[in-house]
Amino acid sequence: MKEKFESPQIESDPELEYQALSGKEKFERLLGLFGTEAARAGFIETCEKYVAERRLNSSSGRSEYAGTKQTYSPPKRAALHNKIMDTLTKLATQHKKIDPVTRKVLFEAATRETMASIAQEWVSANEYGEDTDEDQQARKGTSSITAFYHSRGQD
Image: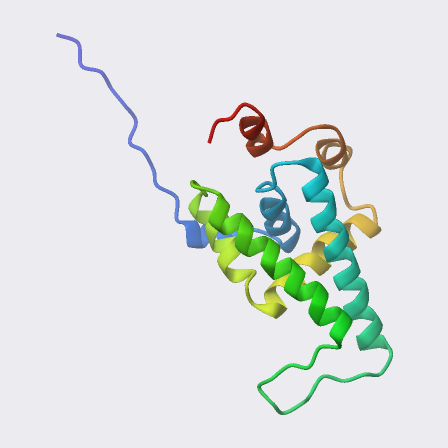
């Protein structure tokens, strides 16, 4: 009788995987949740506007309320942030199966500063051409795996 040898499955720790991700990679995990290119492009546009608004307000001498636990956001920036949060909430509730690392990214992105940091890193990488040709092609030419399955009516 021949025994079948199977290598033991090594479970990865989502927390360690999450911590190893750069802000750009976290943002790309979020982008992978979108079902269509149009939705993804709209989210990217909103995030780019949000980052631009944060830069404008920080460079124009406007200061956040220092010494308080509450952060002041100008109305335009607050509206953009709220739109981002609404989108992330919808993504989290619409997907039946989200891997643990992506779920952690979604959870952590719910904080204002974490989301700002993630978006800032992704926008900066794209502004300064840090994307590889492969990254650009993936965003422009192909849908995500999630979009593929949605188009087939599968989960």
